[in-house]
Length: 102
Length: 102
Image 1: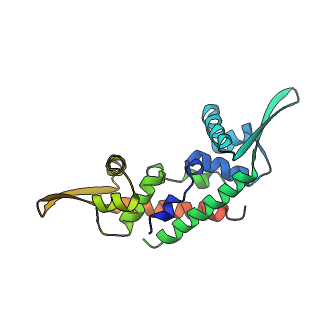
Image 2 (image 1 turned 45 degrees about the horizontal axis):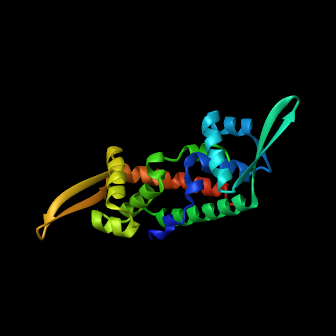
Image 3 (image 1 turned 90 degrees about the vertical axis):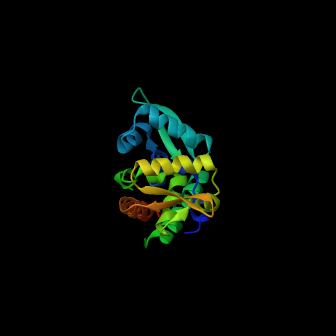
């Protein structure tokens, strides 16, 4: 492999937990905090920390609302986040292609 | 995507620097510490730390020798390391496959 294949990988997305969050969000228009937490089997604290990192990178937005008297946080990918995730998946694909026959 | 697609990823290999080391070692029978460091543009300390983690997982062996009066450390993948890297690449491939059309 050429080393630059893996240098391309966006560290913000590459962390395993955030990779899962980004993939879940890329597949749906929005997901509630609770559903994300359940699907990814994360703790509240862990998911909160990862979402903050993704928010600071401009990849994710969080919206708080009240539904049936309960507060609900819904998470969405931003257009910038979607592009970054596409590029990340493309970089992984190049890595896989150059490491398939080992 | 189904969340288990990304849960499969071996954290020892997934860290970006170690991913690069494993890919380099998978492509050659052995590589010197110096060549690895140059190819991956890492500091001595960084490469040493990552190699130690890989060694502790049983994925890599280091061999010290003296050549032309200079000490030389050469790094090799173990059979266990090669298998783990193959599984890692296969898991990445599944992740890419389920996230290609986003």
